[in-house]
Image (cartoon, rainbow, N blue to C red):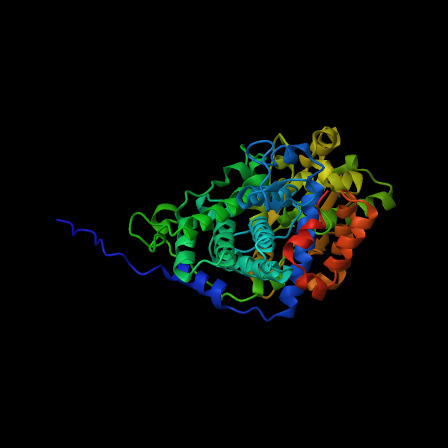
Length: 483
């Protein structure tokens, strides 16, 4: 006869406690983390502004009920929308993720920590506007940067040793958890209430990765993080009412996250929470491409120049071999028809073929008009990926964190071009000196898509001034982005 299950409510799981203690008590002292967070802020918002050029994105934005305007609501940058913080978080989150051009974190689990900005900025803006209306002090942009650093750290540190993709779950579960924790702190919840909020994030049924993989790749991958960060705001607000939590949400035998969704395995941790993730985050600077392909695209651009100099064409290529790492093969090594832009920006063969042919890779190159060029699919069929075990080891090495790709072209006449190897993309910490001026130029370009020159200059000036930005009230900064 089996023993009855105890109904004594346990203490909260250690994972929950560590997250909450970090958001409440840890002081960020790293100047590098704050500087990187500022660069992350401008790059992320710039990505959102570029996404506003795509009707597939803008059709999802605005209030749930058309015409709704929320007094003292959060503003959505680059638009005239003023919304409740939950819907504003969805809007901002969907914008910044739409083109797969914001920052990236690669480990056992990959993801995009700046996805959390949707919930962070919407909540901070809403709180600030209501504070000013009540004659109180608003939050500052330093509060936003601090929340960004902490959300990056929570998402990234859990991702270091725990692969959610291996069990079929999407990485946006970590966006929801991280956003819930930092938003709950911004809302002024007590320690116990934040524990409850984070437990509610884990107890949700989590998103399947099926919308990121053949044969179902589709546009949900572009708004899934917006959905996750907005859900985080909703859960934090629910917890603020005093709604109960679930202390053993991860460890409960038979019914907890570990047993139901993680094959019974507890989470493993490589390091305590600090500011490591923000300091080492990867920026997508040159190409709107899934990050495992960034170095391959850079190598393809080099080969395009070599082909042009040699008077060769892509039609002369017999075979192109991509020497790569395991994660690249598992996620974006894709054959067969590609049905939509979301399918194409997760196919390394497509992302290599386009720059070889055209000498560029832009967000527009994933659209049907460019994809219809028959040379792309013809070249894709001649591109093959092979794993280099050393590249895979270096990918996981915390001291290297490389994302290496190497391309070799063999021509039909038997001749070859020397292999082009790129270990670290331009957005890697090891290439910050080269990357940051280009990141700022990318921001300038994205501001110009939406605003007149005077408004561009005002945003750019304060955004590049660390001290001035940190002191600025959140609603005043967001107002700079209002159309």
